[in-house]
Length: 389
Image (tube, rainbow, N blue to C red):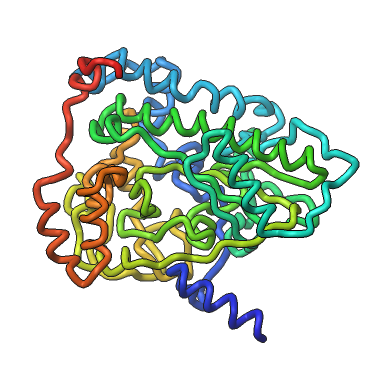
């Protein structure tokens, strides 16, 4: 009973509100997988969207959608694509529809762990060494694991199994390039996403290999196996926002996340609520800017517009079908909601740190007013013309 109360307390601190209608998510229903099997989602535009990542579709013309913009975006995905395609013939699109296979055996002799807090510090140092921008650690929580994964040979449900004995989840954050994010929507902006997927593929595998060399199980994971946002919240990396993203105090929403499931004894971080929810309650910049009105304007609610929504969690939920339909029209991803977010700032600079203090205080309306003229799109041509540092 006490552990149940503790879990509810941790949920509240993480801003996670579970209802009796909760059910684990079947990955076959995510919008990207549905684009391959669901006739209500799959269109000629969605086929062209995927083909554009192989330069098979004719790119859109115009600033941000030239051949070189698509070329950079597709090149940015290369390392992720190589890793992902390794076992495609077995129905495993690793990192997306299946966990990443181990490339390192588990050492037969385990390093003894007497101090879990010290081991957690060590893991964070190793993650930093491999160039992860953030690292948090939390307990394994099966609620966020997909009820089934996807066999990509026929898009059927497949068992979503992990090794026994896993106890912790290491969540890694990977910062997206702000100058590229500021050009969204564009194929050029998509390079910010692809670069971090390639970065995280390498980083998550290297950190997992380190743990396996210590003699413990470690399963590297990207978008596969489990929902990463709840884990990021539980690991204290940030707070959930109206734009469906995790707002972090270091980089705002400008992050991709990966994770490692492990048996290594580790101390866990705690959620760190600081006031993002209160700010999002009065801010609708992301919803206002969404071209297809896929983001909600009201308070958090349960359910969603279609089967791509997680059921039984009270939260802000986008209309994934509208969102992905716009991506297909662009032949690239869209992150307008990230670009216009008031938290999309460089918090290394003191004026932005001062703004953050205002935004997370009772002066949040003043902070929102100060942000009124920010978030405009930067012309992609300007990125190409800017001199290298």
